Image (cartoon, rainbow, N blue to C red; front, side, top):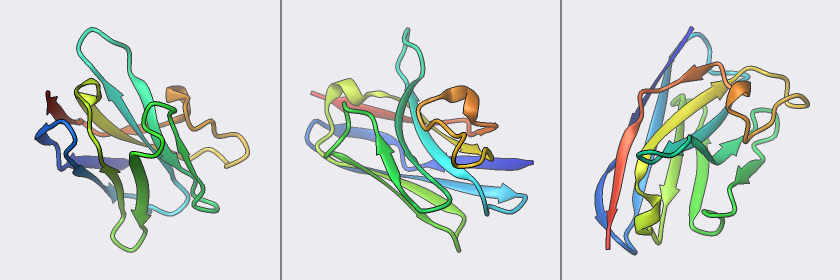
Length: 127
């Protein structure tokens, strides 16, 4: 079992920045590819960013490319999402997720490829 706890959400003005953190506890962090997803009220959960375990390659949704950066600190068992140039449409609950699939099978954008999910942290961007 892996437990994921997100933090760092809050209220920010458009154009501002936030850094989200996701700390993993429980079984070893090694081998997990990690993703960030978000869900706005009345909308489906959508992919934001992901980082592949095997080589650290990163993946981004087109809507956040160039503004958001995913990174990890393996020693701290933590994944980060640095969000810059925030827009009101970025408002959502952001959740991190962990996948144990082999890198060759893992689809970063696919929610079903993730086994563990955090509770989420609210990000609100005011205009």
